[in-house]
Length: 288
Image (cartoon, rainbow, N blue to C red):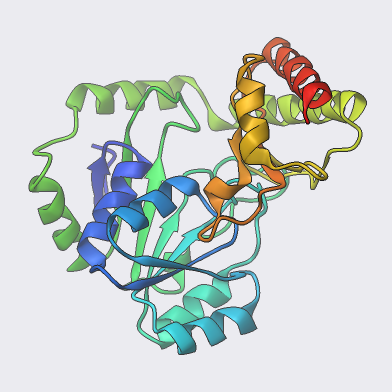
């Protein structure tokens, strides 16, 4: 076990799913950022919840949305996926606490901040109404499906009961492996390497595809890229013909927006990133 008042899960997706099963009923409204993590939107959809897109960085918009929609939950991503942005979201916790609204904070990427310190957990502001989701897959290895939930009692007990209904225990071998890997692979080294890969990738994209635009991500693993005049759902299908898998922007929207955007990962080694840029360039030249 990782220790402390936590519930070990099979990764962040498992943790989000548990929180949704415990906290939501069909028809409940959930405030989400726009864009936000597509995997969470899929879980909310399967649960019969209604995701309401809001600019969570805007205190006025959050306050108005809570008053209008009376949400059962606010889903927050501490380091934006797909954007890599790191807004100060303490006001979300303050407003949620004042209105007795529960928060699920996804901190899967919180350790991957390239300038400055990771954002403070929202549980420090709303301790009895926040479920914190964590994972090791982004800081150690994508194949290591191991994460954890943090919450105050009695909420943690409810999450534990829900997990036991579908999963009696998370692999002890995976937990031991994770502990060994954390000792041997400091996150700071991986963070520095990712920053180098980000800079390499953005330089290559700028040179080969000068019409594409983005804001330099402060954290995370991806570039939120705008493609002028292109439906990225169609373009993503075209890039696969050149061996490049990308995620179209509509996957990160509660209502199918951002169809001129792509999420591009820069987590691969530089030689593979160069191959990806070549494939993207060829697809761009072939587009309709």
